[in-house]
View 1 (tube, rainbow, N blue to C red):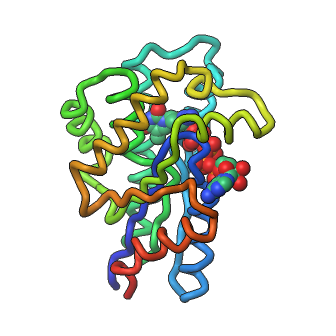
View 2 (cartoon, rainbow, N blue to C red):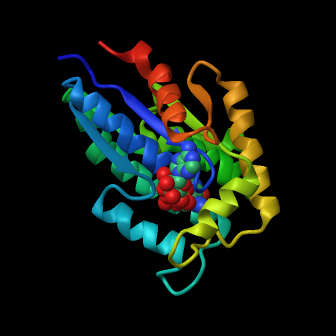
Length: 209
Ligand code: Z5A
């Protein structure tokens, strides 16, 4: 059996990751390709619990930056081992809403941790798994903040961070795309939704059987 493909969606908050992941999953299924969708942090029972701790201080206190990093990686280790690798072995295509580049952007460029060290610890947590293609949905800071402000619900710990934090991580994502242009495709997500969807499709077509 041919191994499945691993595609990740990345970008700042409100960039359209969930929207375009869903659209791509539907298109792939329509072509008869088996698809598994997941998200980070989360995607497993353990991961979803970690998500609540990370986003809404469910433990009753905010994690310090190192604990925050290790919690993201604990969620990822569980997801990779129990969900992603088995699905790829079964020949399924796995689409994930965020993965390792969020760690490099948020904890690296955002929190100021060393990105080379983050790559090493990420490799340990993921058994060296990297995405085949990463779609970086890019929107300017002002639009990202506006889309988040427009939606209902409680702001999470990351949404409450200062604008300078969000500017750093958005620039970090662009820098990561420059470093790995083969894997990370930067897509303008300010275009009309249908155009962004078409750009996503164009980026993944080389992977199609
Ligand atoms: N995090 C981290 O620090 N380190 C890590 O390693 C990982 C994560 C894995 C997870 O939250 C938080 O954890 C995240 C980073 C951190 N923090 N933040 N912020 P998340 O991924 O659940 O949160 P999010 O990025 O804020 O998700 P989101 O707001 O749901 O964003 P989205 O999925 O990119 O957007 P969307 O829901 O698809 O779309 C947002 C709105 O825009 C919606 O109303 C759409 O209809 C609209 N939209 C979408 N596309 C368009 C276009 N093209 N035009 C106009 N409007 C559009």
